[in-house]
Image 1 (tube, rainbow, N blue to C red):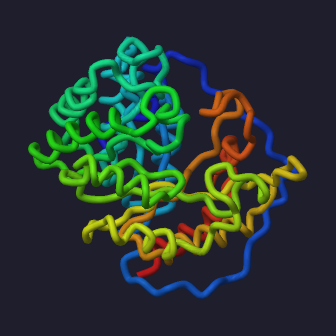
Image 2: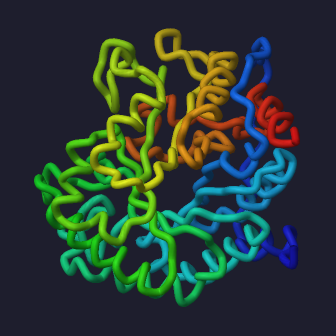
Length: 348
């Protein structure tokens, strides 16, 4: 690596977050499970971690944790909105430099408020081709810094794409992403359709009907079994979960032999009913289940718990799950699933 951690942190000119106490968490290890044997787990299993604007400290420690795990594949993103902030270009240039040792799946989303219909990042841009233009700009500036390009993120989730208000039939999304996929492919970039949440074959068939899949190489899906309340729909009913193979096979009629990547899955170490930290054994179990999925590639969400002083996408501490999804606590304690993954990734 050519980037010096201390220089990066100093250049941010912000105070390091204070260390938060994590006493009394009571981490528990799970029993060993029989895994589906695969000689290339490191080649098909990665980690997802978002990096907030100019959070150099978290960027640097994430690299250290990823090295300790032995991770090869990293999914991260560029916020289109943050890129247009003062200092945005420099921040992302530093991010790519710091992450140069990893093979990156780059997700691009978040409409700049100045370009969107209603001033929100989840709204479509008024000029749909602006997204393709931005994708072209990123390929020109950072194309050597990533191996695959993911176009948007959870487009059937209204927190990420407000289809209910602005695009009920996803026609705007199809036009926007279709143009970006066409241009990315023309420049030799492998394209991934932003992961569905929930997995919906009817939505994917709609995209195929609009012609979006013509320039898509890989279809992304998301799933979080055992998350949220058992008797509420949220992103997916608990009773709907029949395993990853069931989710993937439901898309087969539309895929036309395209591979499927699980670009996000995870489990929060948080017990909703009791509002306390826990479920570490279950996190290990779901991690190992994801490893045995028939997807060509899987990314675990995520590496480090969200800073409790930050706002999650639903709002500030609206859902405590969002603050406990990491393999590492925000104050730096390694959860049992971290150790389990590190051992498995190092096996031949």
